[in-house]
Length: 112
Length: 115
Image (cartoon, rainbow over all chains, first blue to last red; front, top):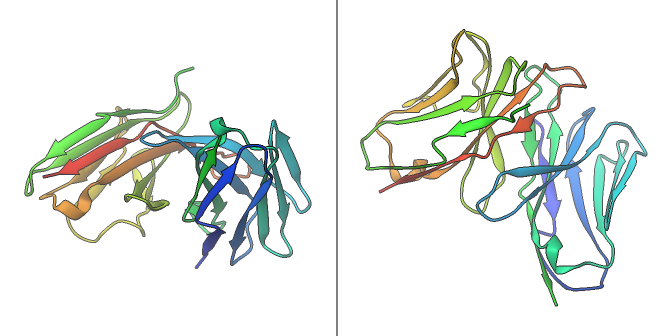
């Protein structure tokens, strides 16, 4: 059974600082996603990572994937208040239905 | 191209009533997934359907919950005799298929409140 764990679960940081969210998963997969969710809203897809060593960047967010370590990171550079949200990683369970298995989420609060 | 549509967006039911949640996939998508998000938690897989078939319902509670995706019309998640613990956000996602190109696109969700 695939398990996905994120840490930290809560993160409060100041504007301008850098930080990293970690996502570990327990079994082999061929896709990993990062999503953003604002309160009461749906999921916004940020990145899809397909292969070992994949790195993608969009603005102040950068995601990477190490399939050997079964680890993905979401790095935030020079945080701004607008990035406050909950961030989820999700891994595709490649057996059968290809369902997504989500981490618990990291609630990020960026203070001015 | 319209995205995944869900309705209603908010649904209030009293304990013991039935809840019906609808999901219209993106145009051309024939694969539908339902996920449930309890407060302060991540999304949990419930069921995966293709047109007229349930492919994987391993995440569905054994009682009171059912899902369908008829040949015509939206996919429906039905919860009978709702209880307070069913209060959650229910998201549906659709995809073209299950290959590595089969990214799931999420709808806006239905927020069910059981009073």
